[in-house]
Image 1: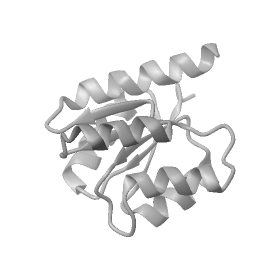
Image 2: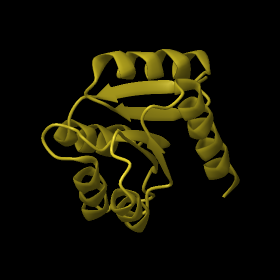
Image 3: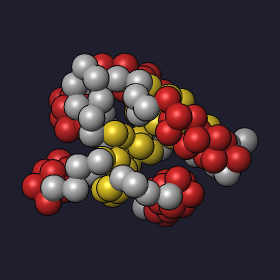
Image 4: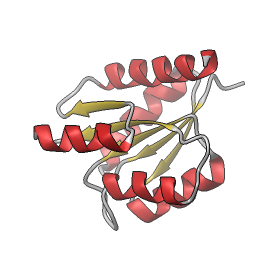
Length: 127
């Protein structure tokens, strides 16, 4: 039995594969989406515990994904970790205002992201 479900929304194939491998080794059930529209559709369908969301997705960006999930009335909204190569403070502020749970700037340790996912799943189980 998986310890939680994660949707990895990342168009960079190597990064998506590395995160998937490490999360599966940690006992998590992982699904990958490669663009904004498929991220929204997949999240609606599978209702993951956590979404690891790249800001720079094709189709529409991570901010638009979060807004679309809120507009769909996704309740509860999955925990969201936003990944970005953009270290701009305004992006971080915007993400947090949208309700994103964590914000990680590239480059980052893949293991650190997995640990953050596990922490959010554990926090969700307690609430």
